[in-house]
Amino acid sequence: MERRVLGRTGRLVSVVGLGTWQLGADWGEVSEADARAVLDASAESGVTFFDTADVYGDGRSEEIIGSYLADNPGAGITVATKMGRRAPQEPASYTLANFREWTDRSRRNLRTERLDLVQLHCPPSSVVDDDQVYDALDTLVAEGSVAAYGVSVETVDEALAAIARPGIATVQIILNAFRLKPLDEVLPAASDAGVGIIARVPLASGLLSGKYTRETTFAENDHRSFNRDGSAFDVGETFSGVDFATGLTAAGEFTALVHDVLGPDVTPAQAAIAWIWQQPGVSTVIPGARNVEQARANAEAGSAEVLGPLFASGVREIYDRYLREQVHGRW
Image 1 (cartoon, rainbow, N blue to C red):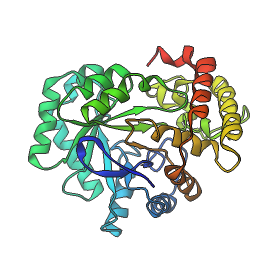
Image 2: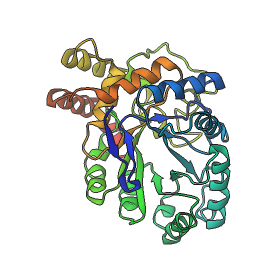
Image 3: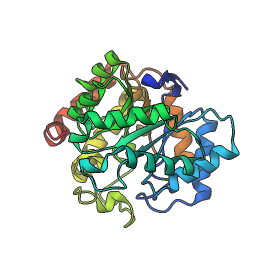
């Protein structure tokens, strides 16, 4: 597994990390035993970066990670959590007092005195532009409760605004073969500033695995059932904002590209993950996993050979043909 410096945190992390939204909520039921097995399999496969949030299962994801790390001291895992979605999404919610309250809760859940990295969790755009927000985050670092901070964003403009801030260590953004817009400005700007990029939704909520059909259904408590129109949270978090039918067509083309260019030994999911971390400026990619097999297969993508220009041009062609008009302007 290749490792890279995670922006201004100065920490070396695996290029394939683990997103743990699945271990908390909104992806159907995952037992605590299964969640612990996913963490074990990921760490054994060379993953050294876990991403979570205080709202994933109302803290369940954090608690499971905290318990796992307590049982595995010295595992060398960097944990990033997120805060801000437990309160009304209004600028007035983003205060030092609330930051202290939220990070204290996350520290208890994760069983640590100091959080490795805390990220604002897709806040309103005006929050990303607010000087007082960064003053408050700097105070958390000075007080020792947080080692570094970043922002998880929805749009390119939000990412660029965050990158311009001197205290920002990382920016987390949706980036995958169905969402190419960050390649144009965000990644170069982050590289120039020394800011780490954490790429989320790498498989477009599973579409890029190539396993879904028009007959595929999801559990009622799975966001792929209840958030296709963005009624629960930003629609970009579900299938990268692509409507399911169009996504299936594009995913079929992507699977064919993988087989034609890379051969039968690379799965579409592994190719999708490898394509992301091989982009200049990306620090780590955070696919989720619901079981041990997925966790191990995702981690294997972290040692994939360079996919090459033919594959890259194929990704761009699929995007331009099916997806640009639907997603490029929106984000």
